[in-house]
Image (cartoon, rainbow, N blue to C red):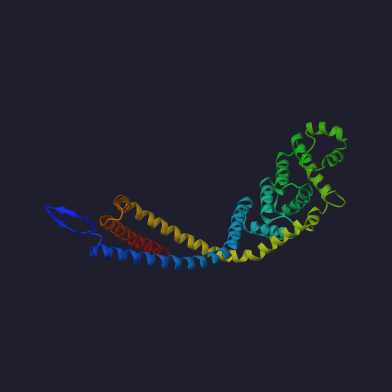
Amino acid sequence: MAARGIRAGGAYVEIFADDSPLRRSLNGLSSKFKKVGSDLARVSGIFAGAAGAGAAALAWPLQMAANLEKTEAAFTTLLKDGNKAKALLGELRDFAASTPLQFDEIADAAKKLIAFGSSAGDVKEELRRIGDIAGAVGAPISEIAEIYGKARVQGRLFAEDVNQLTGRGIPVLESFAAQLGVTKDQLKDAVKDGKLGFANLEQAFKDLTSGSGQFAGGLEKQSKTLIGAFSTLKDNIEAAFRPFGEALLPAAKGALGIATKAVQAFSKWAERNKGLAVGFAAAVAALGVLGSSGLAASAVFFGLSQAMTGIGAAGGLVGSAVGAGL
């Protein structure tokens, strides 16, 4: 076999011959490392699969609870009262569970109404009227709530506001004309003169959704459709599983706090040990340049040993940081 080595003053020393004992030892170690790595990959795959299934089962209720917590924080800011926020959200959850509307869209519409000046006590009834209309014309409830809320802030309705309502199929012109005592043809001038206010819009919505109004009981009718029934079922399922997520929130927050401290500790260690990355990169480069030579193998083993030493030190730092935070 051909030998590869280093000449020094005429002496030829076969260090990395193909059949040298060192070469055979390195090959044996390499085979063992590959087997251990394969076994570890198989075992870790089993654990990862089990952990993944458990995480998937817990992720959905935890995500719902996290979203509710975020929504509650927003309502607390708007209402400036945490207890009022909790009470209102409880009403909105019950409302969602009894209608074809999803809780998230109801909460979004409610936030808009409150931001535009609605009181917490009036929001649920306003949402019911707006929901009856939105469901009948096929428009998002938050969209109609925004038009309604902006009219409240403005105090009066402009031609653009009337056009937005009629353009979505909401027949408010008859109610407006009757309230102002004018014909539909004269209504345009009344709007231009600023005679149409938010109170007129509020009354028009009441006319459309109460008694024999065109859209009265719109949400109830929608809930009896297949899509409406499915939506109601979905809300009830979420309501049933949400408590599990709420119970998991404290543990999830604690785990995130520990993970944050661990990452911060590792980041500090990595900043102080940048040289390890250079050493490891040099080892990989040597492997690429020298192929399967013994010198390359030695370089890689040296680089890996340095990296493992560094990782051990990092682990100690992370462990200390986590321990200090517990």
